Length: 506
Ligand code: C2O
Ligand code: CU
Ligand code: CU
Image 1 (cartoon, rainbow, N blue to C red):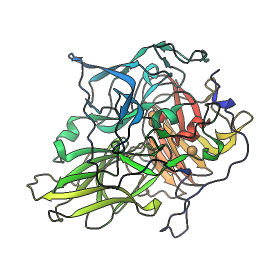
Image 2 (image 1 turned 30 degrees about the vertical axis):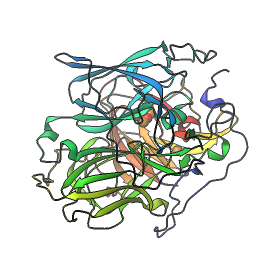
Image 3 (image 1 turned 180 degrees about the vertical axis):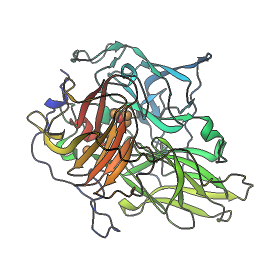
Image 4 (image 1 turned 45 degrees about the horizontal axis):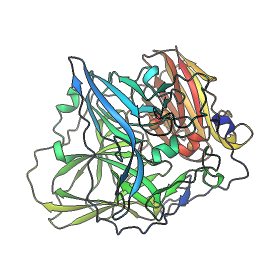
């Protein structure tokens, strides 16, 4: 089997837009781009499985500047649904992978060993990473087993066999990043099977704040999945192995919500403040997270790119694939024995997870009025402007997704961007597209023509949730690292079906 280029994905025939409507929107906005995939397995009752906390990855060794790690990508059979075994492709065989907890300014070196039978690529999402370590989709780690004979060298690909070393300088602010697979044409199925994990950067500015820490600071990695009768993952790969079945080209949304790899888990909390680093690691599903009963709310302290200047209160949080919201939730007004459920309002108040208040406890944390010196950069004048149009379209003779009318071609640089220069990029959509830019975060300047920062656009973003037929302008500023980088839709089915473009920094 020859590995096809994205542009030659065999996606034949027409496609209907499968849309769920929000129950609450005044102007019935479609809530999702995606098609529901239903499990055949017997599903557990919600709130039975305790919330797992992914283990923190330990370095093999450290020196004055650098921490050295080794991760083995391998298959493992895990009990995700009680009583059934699911084969995953996981970093260290885990689902999600281990959490990296690193220091801004210290370098992380990760040796990634590919013990799978498929090529992989690792990308640190939100990382300010030199191009050779950024996870260019053709810079594949071929499996040491020599499996997948027939995969051919792709133009521009720098392949290695068995393993590859990635270097992350972490010259960036404290923030919640994540790492995940980025293999050409196969990102969606490989992330779906488990190749994703959290990566937390810390710094002194954040350490000084009186925020919840330790076991009161918890990553919540949300991902929807569907399971076959025997517990294996269901995923509608196209018959020829490239992309998804045409019916699912809008995106795969599934009927089991996993948080940190557990279905609709429950977590026992003290009646105090908690910090949750929420990551939407779903392929295509968007969530509007809400508590089923008050008074809990979300106080947002950070976004994709780290702390906001000031906290922002939200009754609900709308989170698109790949976005992160760093929030504080105060459980102090609940009584021991109370339960509060997190639901998804974009899916008829479907369950996500539950908190059970265990006991009263002391709390010396606070949410300061000023979190960070981050400031909104005034809109500069006379800067370079570029437009990026995200639309369905022809992906090399087949239906797929395009940027500026083009299917991804690793040899075509759609933009050449000077380092140090401010640029205003305009994103235009047809349906929902969560747009992601590699290398550096951006600030949202306008949404739908309005210059007031929209509710969920605060701070530094690297992924912006763009609704159907919407125009969003962002301010980008790349400061260093010359090379080839990507802009793409983070609906992973769209990405695998060519909605990606390369740009070059000079
Ligand atoms: Cu999270 Cu290019 O991706
Ligand atoms: Cu990224
Ligand atoms: Cu998209």
